[in-house]
Image (cartoon, rainbow over all chains, first blue to last red; front, side, top):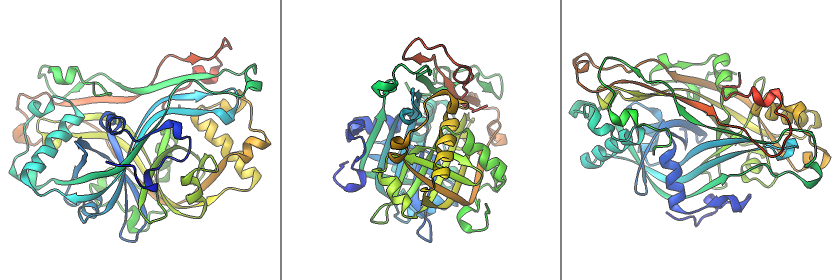
Length: 214
Length: 214
């Protein structure tokens, strides 16, 4: 992965940016979903949310072989994949300095259909494990028919960047004594009560599930 | 807003789709951020996360006048804007039927720079109120210089669609008695403890803030 082209160059507030693959990968891995950008038949941009998983420098997407997005991507599209984590609403004394604390990764690559049986099986496993770590051994694995009924697309990441904002609001000096409340409203994904379909005992991999993947 | 073209037609699992503007708008309004897809100078797709607000059938984005995205959009780009809310991880007895409960809205339009002072002021207000309802009166409003230092882009929504999945996993009959735990892991954005910058008393509009906007 490189950040050599203008496409991934961070021009605005470059101190908030990073080209470190470890930072980019940590955001891709924590995010439950990503947003995939590609061009439709008429060359117009389309953005679709989907589940993803990463193996090394490759992202995997999956779905129905009839999916318009997967069919378009499988033909070898240029793709932009973005994962975003929202951490806080930033309230300043002035509207102008309101902001959001977030971490985002924007990566670019060329998509390809995954047809090799081993790569496809590895992608299935990575996607299920990305959703719920430990789940590969916690449910029935795909059979031949199900594997045929699932299209997998790989995006070998060519370049990318991460951007984040952290910390409190930064107000102008002359606003510091205004009587308005300023500070952070932290936000994050939280788990609600499990909703089981039957009386099967809760396994550790479900009990320990965390939205941050840790 | 219409859904007249193939671009917004929901082909996969059409029972999960809707073209109802009320459904689409409710998702755009609940989402704290959206993902904006556009083409870069070389015609490649780029997806960037950003704060947004809706007034009627128009979405507003804002940022620095130096922002590459805003400058590209202001030139009159075709844009895809997608907002996604994740509601649950869906664990089935088989990997094949694992899924996610979510609500997403994908809308399309042509962007334009907002130069009219009244429309720009209305956009500022909508964006701040979308972030925190009641905040327009809770902080110092933009002055002339700050307004000039903020670019606003409007996207008049031409067409769009919503898609959602709700409910428990749907397993094949022959898998129902497998010993694997199946069910939902509900997830959603939650607020953490406020982090104020000073001793200003917490106002109602901050105390009552909710990630669902209600």
